[in-house]
Length: 146
Image (cartoon, rainbow, N blue to C red; front, side, top):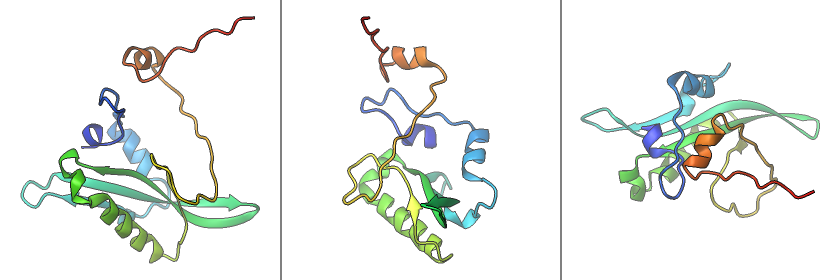
């Protein structure tokens, strides 16, 4: 479900293909809370149709330790994207996290967020750079003239 319906480029030619071991590592860190993993399944087939993960994190903000949450892996099946499941998942994960007296979250977004209070850059380490160039996900940097 995640491979076919999670992040992809505009042409649909590049997708993340996470292994089960990687996903287990990413969404089940020490002190994770299973109730912060929210999924929507089909009634008859029990297939997963949508998912969002919340993870507990401890941040240090200007010297103050702050218990927070990280939101990741928001994914809705392509055929259900017009059904407004994403906002429902976000509200539900927010409700569950707030019940533990945590009121802050970190997340990434592919859209402009109104009134952000902070911005940061993050970097990926490409494992198979040649494949990423071949499929058009990125380009080879041009050499600078001396």
